Length: 256
Image (cartoon, one colour):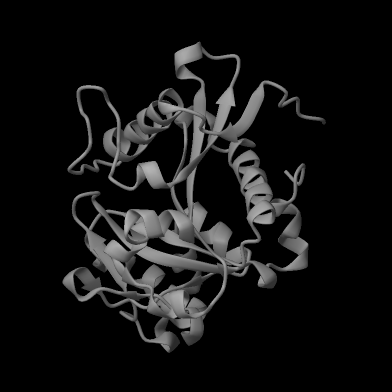
């Protein structure tokens, strides 16, 4: 059966109105659904924002069938080294030491704030966003992608199996390995490797993290407990050249 997705539009944010639309979707997901908060969250206007937003490009998925002021149903924000220089740092450097990545000499892209409207999960929305990301990567010659992804809640105990399997089986090579900063550092090797229940661990890993792992992604050393956003973050790293051929179609226009 062929799926008609002609009602979707995928593009970068063009102006402040686009940015506000992205922030409203982020508010619905990260604040209303997941209980997050932050210094620049606007609860009156219902926008989730931070000081880094002006330095990111914002990839938007719009559904033209919806009301004009409510069309954004998917968001990904992406920042190249040039944006990080203007911002003074990458967003992830609030939580992780990126010295190894910065010293690698590779062309870097930070990913963040990925979310999809609740009515569009389980469909093709995320695939459209990833196809747009593929175009962006090709256009800018990106070699390594990275960014934080989250487990809901701040108690590591229920996540011990999941965090441990990430540490033991998917730790990034030292040459590109981020390390969580000491202020909110959480060890990930909570269960010894021989005692891992891999099936239980995989069940509790969020779908987005599993998707990156299938594409050959790694995690940094240590997790970060983010009380403001009610989550535990891990830093994901992906070497574009190492994406397995069988999954490379996900990063191609029309691959969905």
